[in-house]
Amino acid sequence: MIKSKVLYQVILICSMLISCEKYSINHQESFTVSGYVYYLNEPVENVTISIDEQFNWNANTNSEGFFKITGVSSGDHKLNMRKSINNILNSSGDTSGFTEKTLDISVYEDVNLSYLKLPKAVYLYEAMDISELSAKIFWSPTDDEGFREYKLFRHSTSGLDETTGTLMHVSTSLTDTSFVDNQLNPFQNYHYRVYVMNEYGRIGGSNIIQIQTKNVQLIRNSGFEEISEEEPIYWTLVRNPGNPDNSIIIDSTDAIEGNNSLKFHHAEESGCWEMWITQDLNKSFLIGGATYKLSLGFKADFVGQTGFNLILRNSTIDLWLNVPIKIDEEGEWSMIFYEFGLPDTIGNNDVKMTIHFCNQGVKSWWLDNIKLEKSE
Image (cartoon, rainbow, N blue to C red; front, top):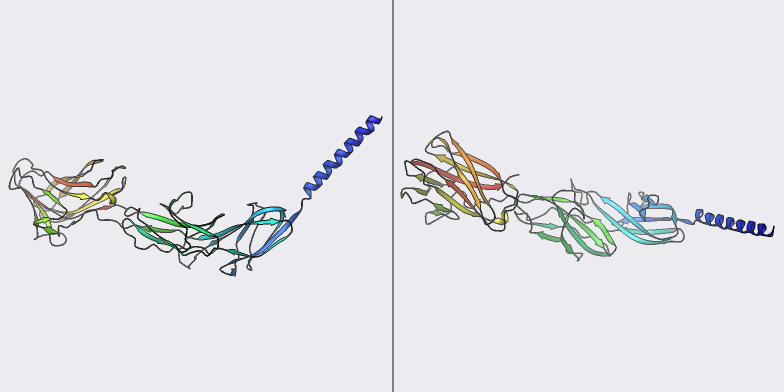
């Protein structure tokens, strides 16, 4: 009987302890966190406020910059403020940036944060000095007293953030807000965005801008207007002296554009004495895997089918392409267009371009305004 009473008392005490514990858990103290948020010294609405990234601890500021979050448990927390900024400089078509800040708060009673300041959002201006290979990027400064660094990212599309973009530049000076990107390719689209950091992490991101580098005319002296000792500069002419009457000369009496053209003459009735012209192309302007368009003016003293080989060579590539030409009218200029793709890997050396002819019979033909550009 005594043992039963003791057991009963033990069970009763345990039940009371468990009930007390449940009561303590279910009635844990909670508090209210409220405050006012300012941007550029003005109350700002539609700022998203969150505590510890909890879905039930968030709110948006009203027109007076006020917010209130209830039911916050006691303890130390992180409060985050974030505001999307459209048309930072009232620029049409601006892709929005944002400003944000995270701070530590201690909640052991109701907390009122009377003045919370969002950092000034940075704005990427339109790029300047855009060339074939470079562009100057610059932005407005932030005003955050805890500023640590700007990070400039670049990407091929507008889906640009810290994970998809390539980090191009880091600046730790508040007023160092420009960068010349000289690692670009001709006739290509690029997107840029700046992120702003303090010692705790990110405090803002700029709008996104897009640039397109200039297309480059790969062939120099394309119209044979620049002459030195009766030879067009930048070009090497191979006349093939197997027949001394073969010739490649400057013709200043006829041109599709400008004053000069280049006249070829094959002096043999039968067979073909190969003749060609060459020019070195600057490797820094060429992109592996890209498509290029060759255009040139062509005239002949005969009709029918002809053509030439377009040869591109360096220590990595040896590309031979046949460009067909159909001549409908003797002695009339026409424009020839030909597109081709470069191999993905083209090496690090300049590329020698050769335009190679093998026309049989006594014939003459002319070239002018030879251009080679990256296609869209």
